[in-house]
Length: 624
Image (cartoon, rainbow, N blue to C red):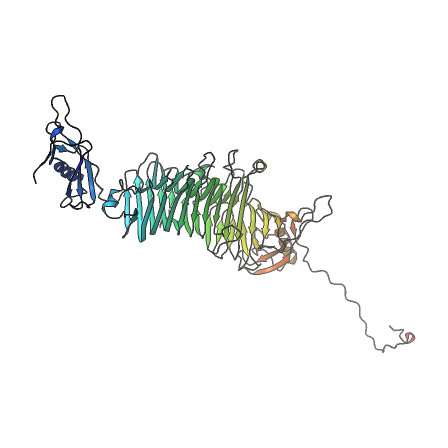
C-alpha cells in the first residue's frame, strides 16, 4: 500500500504501524530489523521537518510492531520505537529491541526478558512456564539457566528439565540463581538435571542468598540430579541467609563412573579448613545484623559422592534436614579435612524423625567422618549448639568414620557445645576409624548420645567395630550394642588390642554392651589363656559413672550390663565360643572378668569295706 502522511498532530498523539509475522524469520534479528525499518518508512510526519536551525513539530509518538495477526486483538511479537528524519519526516528505527532467541535461554520470571518462552507459548497467561516435552536449557555466556527476578513457576510434570551451564567465569557460575530476591521459585518436574561447569572459578548448582527480611523460597517437586565442576569453591546446593530450599524428591550428586564418581568436584582441597570450600549440600549464615542461617530440606533420599564435604550446616542456626536415607560418600583425603556431615552453630539431621527422637527406617550408608565442630564460635554468633543426628537402623546401614567434637573447655564456658546423636540399631554397623585427615587436636570419637538396639541379638542390636587408636567416648548410652575389637598374637594381654579404650560416661537402666573379639590365635582349650583374653578385652571398656569417688561411701551408677565374648568372627552374626559376665572396678569403672578357672576338687574320703550291720546301740558299733 501507499505511504501515510500526517501533516500535523496534537501533543501526545500516538500511532503504531503494524504488520503480521507471515514469512518473517523471527529468529533472524537482521531480517526482523529490516522489516521494522521498512514498515516505519511508510509513515511521514510532515510537520517534523526541520527548517534551517529551527526544529519542526515534535508532538507525534510513533511505534512499529510485528504481530501474530492484523487485528486490534493481535498479540505483539516485536515492538520498537520509531523516530523521524529531520529532512522529510520519514519514519525509521534506530535501535532494535532484540528478537526472541532461537533456543531456550535464561528464565527470569520477567516476560519482557523471557521472550523465547512467550513466543513459544511456554509462558502462560498466569505466568507459569509449562514444558510439554523434555527440554534442555543451555547457557554458555556466563548466565544461569534460571535467574529469579520475579516469581517463577515451572510446570514440567512428567518431563525431564535439564539446565546445562558451561563457561569460564572468573567469579561465579550458577545453574539456578535465586539471589537477593524474596520471590518464589517453584518447580514441578519429572526430573531436574543440573549441570554446571566453570573452568576458571567458583561453581554452584543451586545458589540462594537473601539478606532481606522477607523469606526467599525455592521448592522443587521431583528428583534432582546435580553435577557441578569448578575451581576452588564448588557447591551442589547453597542456601544462605533468609533462604529456604525444599526438595520434595530424591537428590543425586554422583557420576556414573566408579573410578571418579564425584558429583561435586572443585579439584584438590587441602589443609584444616578445606571443608569450607567444597560441599554437596551447604546451608550457611549471611553474617548480617542479626545473622540469619539458610535452611535446606530434602524430603527423600540422597545419593551424594562429593570430592569434599557431603553436608555442612554453618552458622546462625543453619539447617540441613534429610528425611530419608541413601548414601553419603566423600573422597578419602589425607591432606585436607572434610566431613560426610558437619554442623557448626547449626543442625544437620539424616534419616531421623521430625524432632530427632528416633531413627528413620531407610538404609543409610556413610563414608566419611561426622563433625560437630567449633568453626562458628565467636561473640556475635547467636546459636550456641552444633547438632548432628544420624539414624542407622537397618542391617544394610553403615558408618565408616569417626565422630569429631573439637569444642574446647573454653568454648563450653562460653556456652558453645557440640551435640551428636547416633542411632545404631537392627544390625547397623559403625566402623570407628578415621576416614582421611582429622584436625591436630583430635583425641578420638566423642558421641553425645548413642542409642543401641532394642535387644542384645544380632538382628536388633547395633554393632561397633572399634578400630581407631584413640579413645571412643560416649556421654549418654542406651540400648544394646556389640563392641568388637581386633587383637594381635593370642589376645591375652592389653597391649595386644591396639584400638583405643571405650568410655561410657553414663547409661540408662537395662542397657547392655557385649565386648567381642575373634578366636584367631587363641587356644580355646586352655582355660587359663581364655580367661586372660576375656579379662584383657573387658579392660578396654570403662563405665565411668560406675566408679565410686575416693572418700565417698555412695556407690556409682549401676545401670549398664556388660558381657565379654570370644567369637568365631568379628561380625554381628559371628557365633559365640565363650561368653562371660563382666564386672567393673569401683576405682575407675574399668571392666574385668573374675577367674573362670574351675576350682580344684576336694579330695575324696578314704573308704573301707564294712561287713557288719549298724546297730542302733553304740556299744555294738565299735567298728564304726
